[in-house]
Length: 103
Image 1 (cartoon, helix red, strand yellow):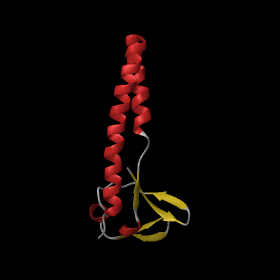
Image 2 (cartoon, helix red, strand yellow):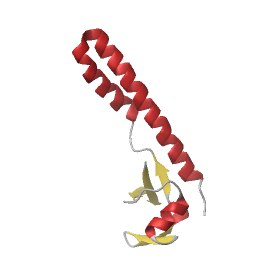
Image 3 (spheres, one colour):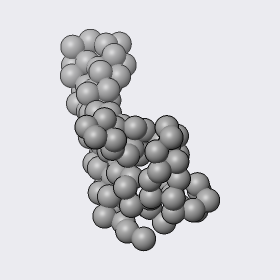
Image 4 (spheres, helix red, strand yellow):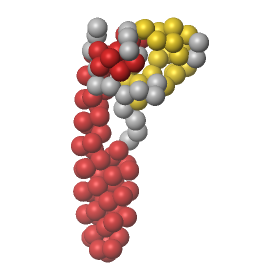
């Protein structure tokens, strides 16, 4: 998951990660911070998913499955896709938890 603030229509990504805004405030040492010369507070920070894990899992699983022929390829892609989808679902829950958190 990536954390960011908005400056107009532009997203500015933070180098920090945290499960909630309260934890983020603890990590940065307070509720207010400066980023690129602009002042923000922790409630202005939002989270978004890092990337699509389902596709990556399917590709990796398919590549591994190539050693087992066509059936191995399909089975590997399916298993890899399921693992990636599970990881993506977990990340989506983490994003929602952070975005609902308030100080």
